[in-house]
Image (cartoon, rainbow, N blue to C red; front, side, top):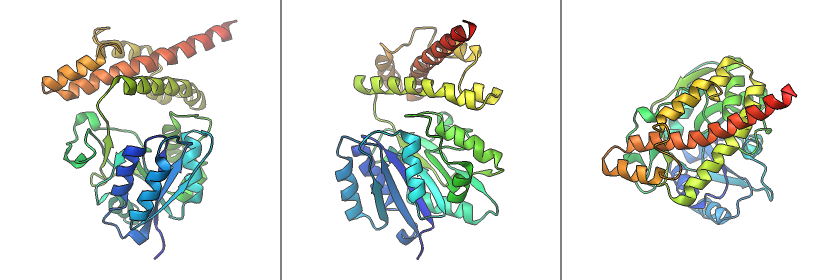
Length: 310
């Protein structure tokens, strides 16, 4: 039986959660002869190679891996896997995402049941448990209106190639998915949303070292946002990148005008858990992370405008 579907999972230094991700992808209800999993590693320095080797020995489906000695960034890592894929349909699953048994079957059915090109999306639900991820219940905070999402999205390989794949200038992270989504939409691909294609995004409790890593990612995202807006000089892109004064004001409101900040967000998260409203904690955390993103984004813009003025 020919492989119909290729799962692309880019990874870097997330061996523990990648292990769970691969085990669940190998335990799908879909016939294992109909799909493959492609792990594209971006120069990991942890136990990722061992984790992949163990998964390959356990899995019923085929798991293949590619490796780089030097970091090349998320877009280039995904492109490498897409070029090596044998399936006509590419499903993107992040390395910290956990797939229920019917996940891949739902994506495959979405493409089989519709004529013409589509982009298939499914819900992405936050979970704090690796052992019982599917016990989490999605809510309003998990909703996304994005046309294309690299954490839970599928597209035919031929359409990805026609669109030009991911733009590798978005190094190492940020906006490459939205950028590709703009190009796929311009090609006329319809967006199909499948509730039965839910994916669970593992979010461990915030510790000091993890908070610093999350803040650093926001700084990376701010740098690549400039490229995104320059490439798509539209109001839609500016709103997506939050490059408006209104977004800065809304972020200040979200953080209680300074009441919540990076120095006390862990205490606020603990309080909201005790109060039984963890959703509020997520909102406050997003506000703190977004403050770092906006600060770096607008500092880059101010520098560019001053240079242009000179």
